[in-house]
Image (cartoon, rainbow, N blue to C red; front, side, top):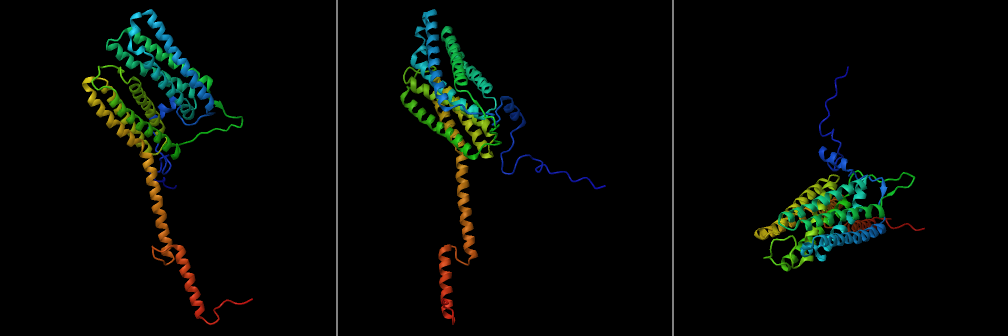
Length: 370
């Protein structure tokens, strides 16, 4: 009987292809499977025109729901008429940013999930719960309870209106009867660079908005969620920070199907965004405002570097390919017996010239006639 074959090395048993992305940890794979983030959609994308129509409907419906909530609350509780967050500029600006962000996320969810409606519903619930956190802080800071409850109702109404507008007016479409589908096993490098570069661009925009906000909004202002001066600019700066946080989570999920450097960039970018959000919270209070600005600056720089890592890796690969091509050209020139500074065309012309001279020196070396 033949002896048992030697045990296969651990590296050989790995199911990861050479040069491919490493598998995600089992816990993360289970979490993504439960959320149906599998990059294997069994449907076609929503039509772009319908997404635009759904966005307009969601904006109109959300603003109408906001105005209705404010009208009902101020009618039932007249003292809330002077509630600062009931100003049109305050709730309208935040509503527009939130709805546009949700509408932009719907096609992305439809691309990365085989069950986009369920995933998008869970994201809507999670976003609503997150937005209720600052409402609770307002209540702890002594803001009137009817006004805070109205804000929470407004956030809930916005989520309901936006979700239903998107999934009903811009639904995903089934594939034709031939069973054609798309189920990529990993993210393409070009897709990775585009997504990560888009995040880097948003980080740069956040940096510009932060600098303009520092110049425009008074530094010695009272503790408040929104300042009385430069409200729109401050709200846009904060809303973009929230959008970056959502994008960082999405990029972290996508990075599990990308290469090693892309995953490092996603983690570094996510940490930078988290640090920036912490700085934004600190900047809301007068006592820690200067510290918060410094922390936000550090977070933006770290996030920008992280999201630029795939682009820098691509540049390094391009330079390495150029160097390899130059080495191959030099090796080919050396095989022809030509110095490294001489081109192949010049070497061929020189060789032909020498051949003609040698032929002229031999009797009968000239060309034959006829």
